[in-house]
Image (cartoon, rainbow, N blue to C red):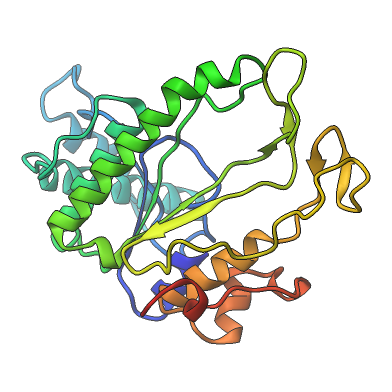
Length: 285
């Protein structure tokens, strides 16, 4: 929805998933450019083994609007198909020879952030002045042996993010970049019988970037972590006191979505919460 509003405000947006299907980059149809899906390994060749020569031309002919009598669904399909082919050609040509300034770790997240960095490096050629990315880091559902898993995945997370920060600084983009890290659920504050933690509700998430006012905590931290806490629902699970709307409110303002009407379109539930972080609370500029 941020991309939708920014597009309506005249910005040239681009949304890119480096980790498959997701909901966070999905706005309203036709309101902004649809998200592009790119592998962590880069742009995959389209129809690598065609059954005939000049396959793309034949496919465009077959999927074209054939006459003024073509139905609405046919026209819509043809438009989507041709847009997808044009976008593929633009991305494959633009990213064919781009290299990052830094070496990214050869890990799941490292490769994703490396691909995102390449796209950011070619933002002008892609015609973007606002870009959105989705990446994913797995392995955090630690129902057992949590310390053992963390010994591996925490250094991987740190190394991938460190390379990304260095790359953004090298490209001169770190002050214009914000990274929001979150999860679909938190972990229990108390361990289970397998030295792990289970699914929970309230948790801590973080934001980083060159313009972020770092080193501080927004929202409220628990002053009572016992099961008798008024926020406890048992077994180390706690009711959240800060909404995602609070975080994204500040991020949206930083992205130049500033009026209440526009913010309400981006965050339709924002007025249900008493606490909304502002741009000035989260960012220096």
